[in-house]
Image 1 (spheres, rainbow, N blue to C red):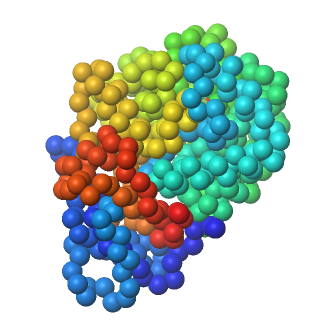
Image 2: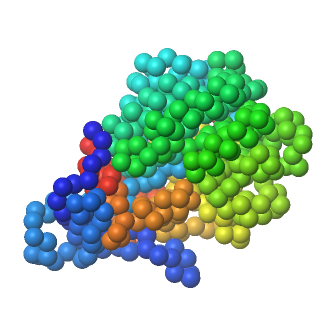
Image 3: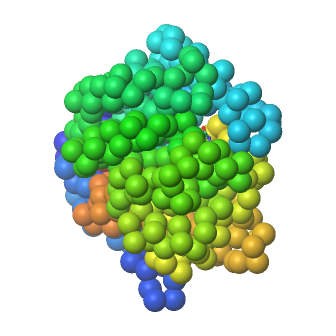
Length: 422
Ligand code: GUN
Ligand code: ZN
């Protein structure tokens, strides 16, 4: 089932929590104890108001006591790692070698890719994620299967063929020309598909497994089609050393992406833990975003990301699960781990900060902030209904429960006003 705009206005009643434009003192949210959310025939939010009897002419779907929230946005995860979540086989490079690369090689089998793609989209929707930014494997047919699954689930998805032409197993290595031709073909087939819900992203895995010519060609393709770029940066010290061994012409990790043309205002850089002040400054100047993946960083022992370095330079930060190093598809786990990450550094994030980061903040980071990320008139109606325990009442308790407890269930999900879950 692919998402289609509803034909006539529809209205939903429930409690409602949404980010609103930030005030100078930080993240701002709006909570309504009894709200009416009206979705127009174009799939956009027509209005969000306190509920008043008779205010809407037409049937109202009463979802109380559920709370209506913007659908979650997972800005970084790996489709072919769906079945290896929880493989505790060591720090990043060992884990890739032992757990990830053997599994990703299985995606050369199109039937396997299609099977896991269905599991993948099902788990996203069951977690309340309505937008995902995804790495596929290096296999073009598997990536095609992924796009088909996103389309039939009705998800909003940005996905890319993972590029790697060196320092990886033969089964995953795709030479530069072949990989770029496959990426170009996928752009033609899928970019802007699903009535614009689907996008193709240029996806060099990370600097150690990409040659300079591959990254340069990838950057040209991104520029030609104004595509998002997604990759990893400065996740782990051994990875940083491998990067500079592979690319000795660069002054540091960020300089690799900078010199090949990948460091732009459309780049999403996952992790960003071990960055120097110079690298942070360049990321800020280029307007690239950092995708914070705290649950993965804990699982692989990669280190703590200093949000203060990003905030000091107004670098946009989105949140990613980084499944399968992240242990859950659930962005509530991501928010909770982001709280722990900040705590370890002596910083404090409020539940409202975390909620805003996971919704509007992540939408902004991936370039979709004008379309989604909050429940406000004019935005596309990507929202979920979450059922919290009956005793959770009021704004503060709702935020606390949402971010730190795990017993609320996703009751419904909508993308551009169309039901996509259950
Ligand atoms: N760096 C390169 N590939 C990966 C991956 O699959 N997961 C994570 N967490 N880091 C990476
Ligand atoms: Zn990743």
